[in-house]
Image (cartoon, rainbow, N blue to C red):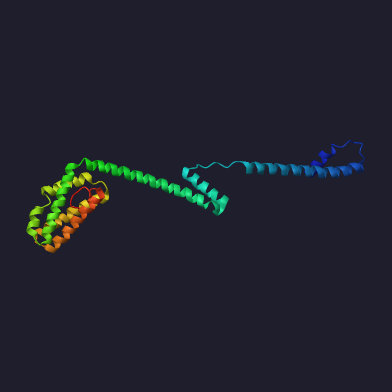
Length: 231
């Protein structure tokens, strides 16, 4: 390869140049040509590297959340702790927005519930009867008068006032918590009727407290606690 470069270089000199001059020129030209070739190779490599480095990388898909994270990260890197207050303000604004949405949803549910309650006059009458029944039963048990308690209870869960109460429960209960309280009320009421029938005062008191507590919790959850007398 070096011989080829020398031969090519000699062809560029006129024949009038002396052998010694030609020889020295040939040597100088050979070195210069080799350097030109090497320089050209380096330039090509630098050009390729520059082109590769300047080629834009593939743009990843950027979600809204990813953009927010990138933005906050860039602020941290650019300003260090100096922008911590600004970042805190951004995060606080996001929290406020989420809280506002939750408040709106809760208000919407509350208005819907109030609409249902307002149109449920008959069901509220059934529930008011439950309040009166529990008051009478509680007074009778407190006086150890289980016969009076039995007559008010009706002897089974198939009595009219219990059925009516469950009609109201089914219409006005929407959340799992409310339905749980209804189940507790019905199961403890059945235990109360059984204890009163057996003339078991202590068990009757325990079952009554459980029933009354479940009913009160249910009225609180549904927003009826202020609309029924005696609670």
